[in-house]
Image 1 (tube, helix red, strand yellow):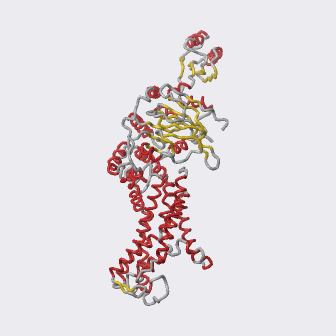
Image 2 (image 1 turned 60 degrees about the vertical axis):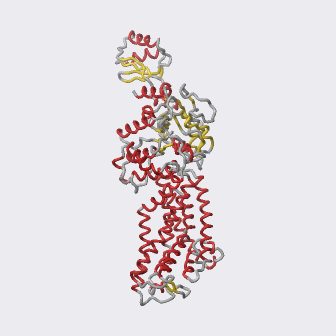
Length: 337
Length: 301
């Protein structure tokens, strides 16, 4: 664990909060020093300090095996933390599951259904498990939830005949049986085709627009970039960084890209102007232009031209979340050992 | 571009309020009871449950047919309890069938249902969704236990119903001569049969609690079912060793056949009540153990 990078907090003006562990009303989820060590000694989550502001679509990002699901299980009161505190909707977990979870919809580690029951009966079963849900409105709410995820036509089919995508949708429907303050979705687009992924993302945006905070875990960086306002990155059980998606992406260093057939000459000029980490291929040179500001960029371009480099293209490419992740962790986005 | 979109959304995260989101709802009695009803529906909609009840219903038919065919050879003192009386009165097939089903068939089916109750949900992953609903661990355990007890009653009644039907079809019915020599009418005898069914179902309560406890120990439904059934057989083997007579009164199977005492005039309640007391002790001990285990367990399945 000593090699893991230190937790770094990135706070924007929108979610500026104090360092006190007490729950502010505007934080839907707040953890402090949250740790889970399983019997057998494996440290799955290590001192997690996470803050999810109300109204955000919060991306919880990390490779498989980085501790995302264990964190979600602790937040949902399924497993008890070894140390630290988890607060959801202002109340400590797992002590307050009875009062907190009726206001939370969750999809944890894929859907799980009763194969011998129809989709509709599966939803009725999960709805009956919630003691605060009204049996008189159950049938109506089940129908609405099925409609919302596009399963109306398959509602009376046995769940064992469902495809993985349909099961995933039914899982989402059970999270949407009630109006929720918080929706926790663990890899909701797993197993879906591209069209299904788009539909689920549209649904997430729609739910968020209604005022529900969405906590979305994923190992797909572009998914987080597409739907999330905030994100946190986990690696090997530790929080690497959290903040707004825009901030995180802006932390990724932009690269200066020069398109030219004269790669060698261009590389010479760029090196003289202290552009580092140069990579050259047939018709393109790029590098990190840390020392450059807006003033010096045109001068660098002029220098290239006066050195006889035929400049076909010249510009800065903005960083992506993936670049940010690689820059922050110094590693690829692979399954953690 | 997606980043621009995210950026735009990111500028106003706190401006949103939970407008359409829920106000906290209160727990209602109907809502609380819904899980118990759902649990019963779930239990009796499984093909497995129906198959088990079917097997139990076949048993009295089998015994009835065998007795009918072998009427000439049937001699007193041989075979299961009450079998000699069956040919005189078909109603005795009820008691014979219960005496045959109680050591093996009934506990086996109960072991399957109780053993699978929590472990089966854990194996399919539905347990985590019930718990985040939130079902409440104690409430879920209580609902599972209740459904187990109802299954015991259903199992016993399916033996009784099949036995009454088979007995009426194959043998004469009429006034019943009790074990004490007194005679009662058919109506009164049927009432006693129902009473006996209730007592037999209640004597399986301890086993339901044991099965539920075993079910909280594992994430495999099959393992929990097998363990429970093996336990029943082991305990009955221990019950047959005379050397172990000191512990035998505390074995949950020891007084299972005491229901015969209810076929006397007046009824002998001593053994029956001791049996029911023992069952409540088992329910208290293993119910608490199941609760202690389940309420503190990490749900990782």
